[in-house]
Length: 281
Image 1: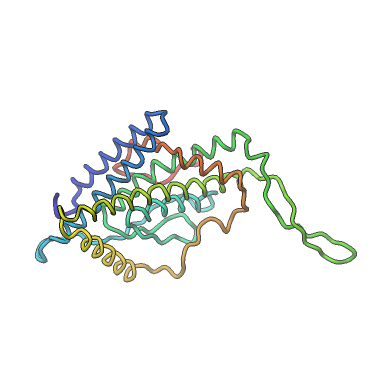
Image 2 (image 1 turned 90 degrees about the vertical axis):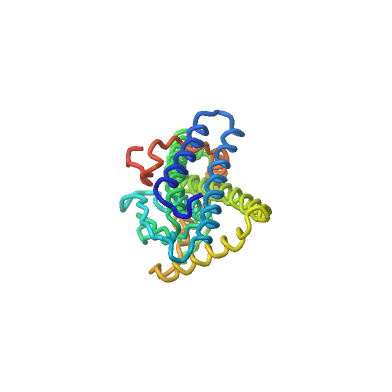
């Protein structure tokens, strides 16, 4: 493998991932779809490990790849659901050695990592975002959320005093959608992280055939941490979308099921992932 993360190797990687996504989309078998998703993440993680080992062997005088910062557009200001979109991207990024800062408006994410890792995140995000929005649309249109309730606190006046009590109220469509998408993104994050952990463990077990893997991975983590610390201007920690939505257990369960069965929607523009959806989608 080349010791540089040039455009050609990166394009080749994205093309192979794109092929797996198209295969996932073409099957109606849930177990096959799961296998294709795992294969896409396994390929991304394996390539990332190989590149880390290659970088570790580059002589000092040679051009050596370094972490970069890239802005990822999420959506336009005021659009509902941007926090769940961010949650999905951050979940994917975490499983691919990319750190993130999130704009206060949730309209964009600043990704920190090696170029090939960020490109992989964009490719997976472009496909999974379509899947998440499509699945939540189907859930809302089915009307299944109408039988669910959320707990709310209401204030009542009794004998001249204001008393608060908890009541069960119908779930609003927007609340159901947010809860569905939060659970979907969380499930996807766990699936991808599990694959990444398995591939890393396998690579370390094979270290006798490729000495230096553990050191290369440790050096990569340290280099990324140092780059993030010196580059990031974030003043706080993004806490996710939970603060903006009431809790709906039924919608969460539905979103989790959709995340388990996600087939990765077709993404013909994998080489240049959009990262956004039009309002009408």
